[in-house]
Amino acid sequence: MGRLILVDNPLAKYYLSILRKPATTPGLFREYMRKLGFIIGYEVSRHLEWRRVFIESGMGRAEGVYPSRPLYIVGVLGASIPLVHGIWDAMPWAGLGLVAARRIVGEGRVEAELYYERMPSDLSAYTTLVVDPTLASGRTMTRVVEEVEARGCRSIIAATVVASRYGVEVFHSRFSSIPLIAVEVDPVVDKGFFIVPGIGDAGDRSLSADMVFEPALGLGFEKPGDNGV
Image (cartoon, rainbow, N blue to C red; front, side, top):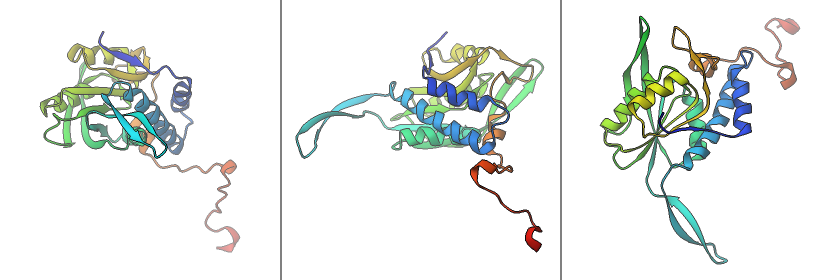
């Protein structure tokens, strides 16, 4: 197997536990996905290139670090939007590219087709971070990394929240040297190539509207017609 890096952090595991619960509302799902993005960004920073710099603080001279290469984040629409925001919070100097992919499921197999791309035509100067909250079959991540490579990038990192063992094997059979960062690897994909136990459909859960107002939040809205209105 290639370079699989698991985020060994109890706070990340707790956030993932919240995401796994079917009762987690879309608003909370987005919030905790974004929080996980920040932690993943922290882990990604370990694999970036840094150079030493010296800073005059006004009180003296100190040593620090600065990114050696510009960074571009490429997120898969629309499921990755909250996750990308969290990573961007951690590394706000990064550029942002977006791709959209559709899954083509056949008898016992699945492929990924990109139908929208918004990123620079030349990525040779960048470290590119490809982000998708789930890596089930591995085909989407593989296809996006192929596109990033075709644009000249030779410094690539892949990141996800939950991967399947099958998806990791598929990805690393094509890109054995690219680091893949994940919070957890689940054991199974089902016949529809969804991760089990997974976190459900990350796109639907991230982008849906919250229609339930929790009384504990003090959002006691009146229904139309109350108080004679």
